[in-house]
Length: 481
Image (tube, rainbow, N blue to C red; front, side):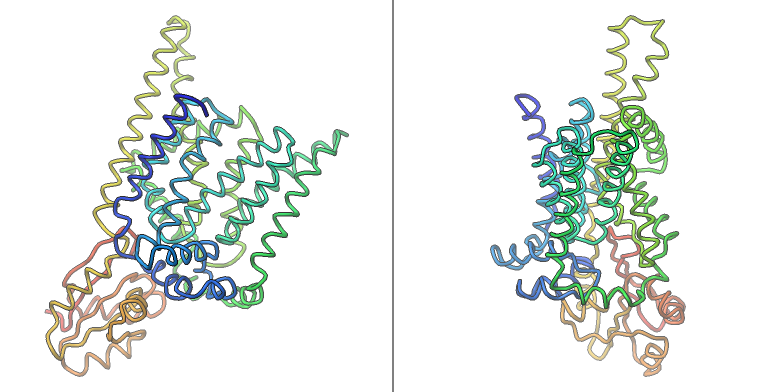
């Protein structure tokens, strides 16, 4: 990058950093709290040798622990690695996009990522997903450049990025598998045509190095992981593929502002994918196949499925969408070429593209208001409300997603209820009872009678909204009145 382009990328990155720093210290949500308590508060020697479950993101836990050691335990230090990963992805996306598209298109892609609701949200989420998005961009860039130049350095960089991505979270295996499949198909095509196979030495070495690094990283916890994944997830009945797909669409509509905007974006994205297909089957495959591998892989694994599993592919989605915004105006004006001069055609194309991109950036920026208005989950707000409202002798109960945060993080002496019988026994005492709960779909899946009684016998006093789907923290009171 030189001159004006470097300045543009730097400015966009600074804007991206600013919108990610704002609100970084807001309250934690359930997953962040759980990983903090069971992993990040441990010494480094335990973080890399203990696997508490698939909620663990090993590389993130290591980096967050180092952040604590350097700056102390705060919400912002817990989220600092996610913030840095998220900011780094902005210039990284420009780097990748500029290798396959004009610089103006690459700048637009990085600008959209900078103000993307979802990317900002995950850059403020103390989990490894913003890191996965960065590693997905890097692996694609290094692999593509390696294929174009046949230089060993790019393949070594690919191996390191792939291994770090997998060490961040196991779902990174699926995008890497898609990339290996693309390279394998190209190698097979060369073999069938009798082409020189020597060029495939470096990619093969890169794959071997990536596998060795992943095994090295996971070696201390492989036995624990095998034991964990042999058990069926208790959340599988609630986090189903159909639910995940519905939440994915709902979340995308939230990020674009309206369902109409999402529909329009989908149309442009389809044309963008077609444009990449016509440009290069290799580039198209590297951008599109990871999504299919992610879906198929999580289904075959038979575990829980969440919309956030697809978030690491956000860079590819932005590239495809931006290609559509640039290609559609060019296509429309090309059809009318006979009625306009070349200069007029170029001016109209550029103007229409500028309007589309500006509109998309404005719509995405507007959705950030919600991200700043609410925390991810407002456990603190509900806690302070209950402390102010409860009278001596009144019992406070926790259920569902409220149990762990209040018991293990806030250290509140409130009783947790897991079954209908436990709740009935408390209510039979004849005293007023307060209830705080979250994630009702999990309560409903594990104990439908419990959720039914809460809805029928308790009065909802106040709802503390958050930006997590189904994650509002609800305070209710018994008896119903």
